[in-house]
Length: 548
Image (cartoon, rainbow, N blue to C red; front, side, top):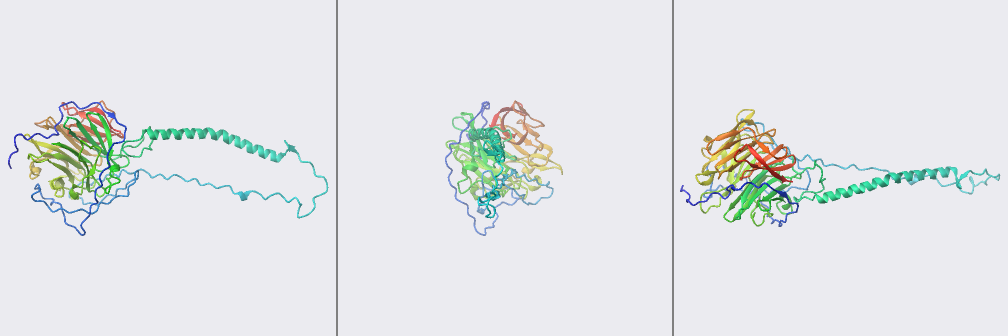
């Protein structure tokens, strides 16, 4: 293979030499997005059963000169989705390979009860309960009334005593009812008015329902088992742009965007943006998430990948992130049907290639239902190749992926996954990509040994700095503990604990790192942002709250 020209530039995703931004503010407004374009419905070839996957043993890198034939997938099942509805995820049956631990299926995260308000059952007054009318004045059965003079009836205020006391009792009851009811009614009216004003003032800019109590610490904002992913890019003026993705309490896929000019976060609810199109989004509750951005020549894009309830990878893209950051479109992945292991994770990046005329490719790593880790790329989405053999990876493995230098060119990869080392523990492993995955299993680096086997809360994250020469690999393990390793350019240094300084008390349920060494974690119904202390990678400095 010929060497690249000497003037080939580094990736434009270089870490900025400037200090990370330390001040951010919340922008409360609805996004000024344009309506997304409708995407035609996919159609399937009737009776088409041809497999489009490369064999699990295939190690070659498939390029455009010898493509596997692709297969158009079956029609995408549009859900009967309603905002606020609870999804129910059924654990799919899948084979457990030899030596695999019991696979963990994520809880569906949709345990929000559909409360049925009790119906008050009352009986209306029955007019027939009243007695008959008075006896006819004509007398008893037509007889004449007695002739003797009747005894005078005692009266009070001109009314018979019985009638007077009945009327008096009714008046007393009415007075008491008015005395109690009017203040209660006024208080209720005041409470209703305050609640309405609060709901209006707390109108969210993410498109989710805004009728939750705005001042309640119990208000659910983020899905309990939401994952998180982050990416960044730099525009021609040197402005840094960062985007994070997660799921809100209504299972919507949310994008939060920040730039170093406005120093504020803005929100796009991708599920809402696509609701009126022919391709509405239906992410799994707690879907794995991966994202990447590119800023090459005059192209500025951000992509996010997730899975639907059938464990098929789906994608959304902002294809003009510089001029139309609020516009998001469905990325069909060239109609490839990439199926993942139920509960497995995703990892993604934009990979630069050395050719002068090459714009690079989008790369997504995922675990196949058979167990192997594959990487699919945008040059030919439907022909993913095996990166880690099934016998070398744990079921439901967490994943991370990083670019790697080859001399001065950033066209190599590092894939992080978990390998089973015993019946109860595993190891965080780094597998290198050098033109091909062939022989990569002989170059594996152990990043952390003796870690717990995969669990729903376990995730990996990684980043680079120092012109891509140093790297940090993180693992959020069961119980919230974070461990990792630091590559200082010469050797790997394990880190058993990390310090998150100056911020609130943390209890991370999901983590992510952007390529410019920023850390994001979901903790206590918030998303917190930290910058890595590159002089001591065991420390993170609190920057601010990224959401809400």
